[in-house]
Image (tube, rainbow, N blue to C red; front, side, top):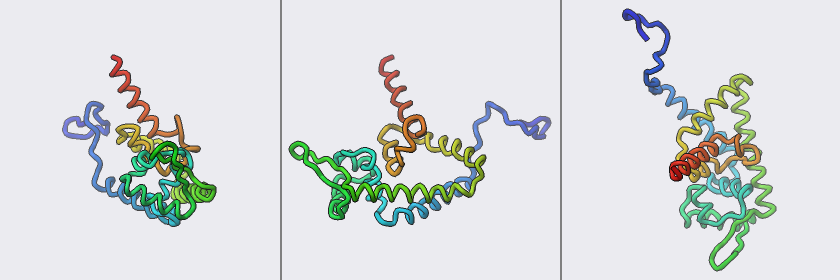
Length: 194
């Protein structure tokens, strides 16, 4: 806000929020690259798609190929190829439940591999967060929640973003992405009823 051409230091509450600077956008992009590098090293045993499959099945098996492909962002043929490799490695089992319908589960080895991947993933993220003080970590958590909720469109988007998550740790009210998807669903249901 200005008074007589001078800034008063106070922001006009009706003014639109300032656009992010190119420097802030670069910082966010660099943070993504830093995370991608750290997580790529932590999960080097498998490709990103295979890691996502193992981590998703750890919490949500049994699951069909089409549903799993949607979650991990693969076409049905690409998901089938990734699953073929995981089956060949003895990490995933296929079970025909009716006709052509196949359900996927982890084998004992697959469960052990998924747990190890998740442990290394959380450790890599924890090492990056250790650069922040406890107060800064709390501030970061609030800001990260806000950034994570903003682009949520629906449950499918939430599942895709959370495909690597440890759902035993981040679930229900602790998951900002899932909470936003639920709020969108409640609003849509209320709109349809009204």
